[in-house]
Image (cartoon, rainbow, N blue to C red; front, side):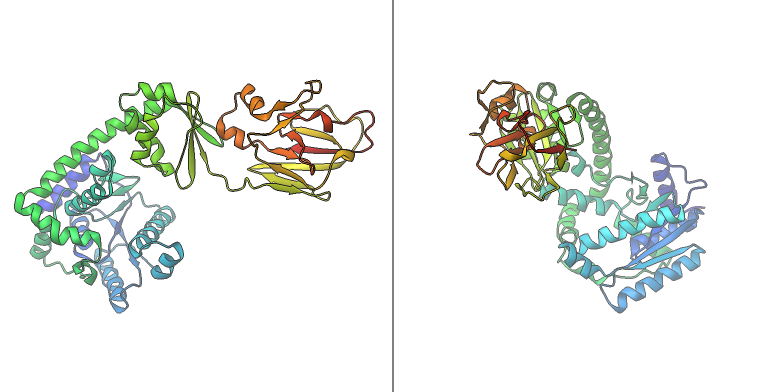
Amino acid sequence: MQDRLVTHMLKFIQDQRIDLTDKRILLAVSGGIDSVVMAHLFKTSGIHAGVAHCNFCLRGKDSDEDEEFVRQIALEMNAPFHSIRFDTRPYAQEKNISIQMAARDLRYEWFHELMKKEHYDFLAIAQHAGDNIETIILNLTRGTGLSGVRGIRPLHEKILRPLLFTDRDSIQNYANKHQIKWREDSSNSSDYYYRNQIRHHVLPVLHKINPSVEQNFIATSERLLAADNLVNMLFKKWREEAITSSKDLISISIPTLLNIPEPVLFLSDVLQPYGFNYWQSKEIVNLLTGISGKTFYSPDYQLTKDRNTLVLVKKDTAANDSVISETTQSFHFYNQTFIIDTQVDYPPASPNHFTANLDASKLIYPLIMRQWQTSDRFFPIGMKGKSKKISDLFTDRKLSVPAKSRVGILVNGNGDIIWVAGIRLDERYAISSDTKRIISISLLS
């Protein structure tokens, strides 16, 4: 007769609509009580699995003994054993992240590589209900949305957490009942890490308030997970209606956004991956009926209100002025490439906006390719000697604020504007029948 914990684990896995028949499972086993009990449960249930262990080389001899201990577990299970050693501290210093974050990044990257190489279908992690509570409390203290308070998913992207249904006490009782040995990590007793502070000081208080706190959290987490799934279905539908994407930018329709019942929540979900926080999303929605041109920033992106659209683009540090000498053959502005040809026959090929055929005798070096300025004015071809502000030219063409910043303005050494790249040439620098030598500048991309 199966132990109740085994039965409950198999039922929990079945509830996730997973059939492990003929599936290859990889167990992440550290040597601690949770992962060792998980390995025992899989062995007892008859589910064949491989064992993976990460040695982070953080505790000297203890780390090596952990690795050997897990190797013996795999041997007793008659399971394939996979192990790896990481230089965790140097990696954390190089990436300027915490030891915990470094260990997490290293192990999950290796797990994914190992699963692909050895054709494992699922990775099993021994997180339990207590870990879920700690995660939810941490997320709440940092500020979070629905996805943060619903906690850890039982199954997500081939990562299975088969012990989320149970608590630490049940795992401890199972280990004692079956005389299972495990390795203690001394860091678990320290209050250095936030999770340990919650485990040692917050959870005992919650237990005094309600001894069934883990089970209540499990039920609440399941309901919130279901609600999160429904919200994501709605968000997917609204994204299709409100958002259009191109190579360089994302456009969000303001009228569509304002018709969504909870525009702040939706916008926050859209912008969060780009570094914008909830309070910025709230401010953006509050200003949607204002004038165009308002810009908001995250560390790597900028969002601009342009008429009836919010335009999201990545900050581009490559937009510095390009200096062009007589020997320059090519140059870059933003993500655009320009090629210079000094051997052009007269008359040149059919003119177009993406190629500027210039009278070489009128050029004063160095030339500069820069962003537009509010005072910029030039004499466009076709205006019969009349000047025009570049800002008016952009308005005529209905360019968005980010698009304006990406247009290169070619300036002569005397300060004259020669070419609004890709749009219009200044007639003073256009070739004529009197031109002796032509220089052609072409925009490739």
